[in-house]
Image (cartoon, rainbow, N blue to C red):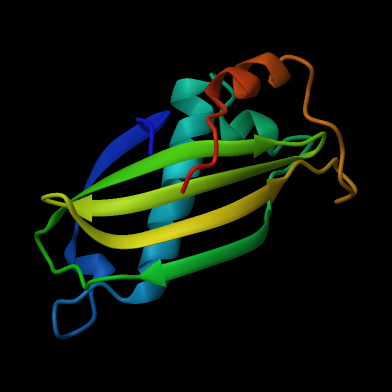
Amino acid sequence: MTEPVFAKDQKVLFRHCDPAGIVFFPRYFEMMNDLVEAFFDEALDYPFEQILKTEGIPTAQIETRFVRPSYHGDHLRLSLWVLRLGTASLTYRMTATCSDEVRFETRATLVHVDNTGRPSPWPEVLVPLLKSKEVPDDA
């Protein structure tokens, strides 16, 4: 797989874990959303606080494989690849690794919606930016 178009580090905190100190799987979904939000903010300069005033980008589909557990104190590297840009959708792949060991991998589709919740074409300003981040899906 090519290099990710966006990546960030995430330390596993107490709030992410169950009483055994293992990441509770719904917390991974929060980490995924945090990375998507950071991608739009930092890589595209189109922050969610701006988007959510008049539009939205909900997840329409997600498939995740939890490969190995993560523990309180682990340092994860979350990486994102834009696989396909549609008129109103975007499919991405994301992984979390710790010392090159895969902890989860996911593929999801986001849909750009207008203020009524209906699919709407991506804003013109975003299309070339998102296209420039698209990589071939060889995963």
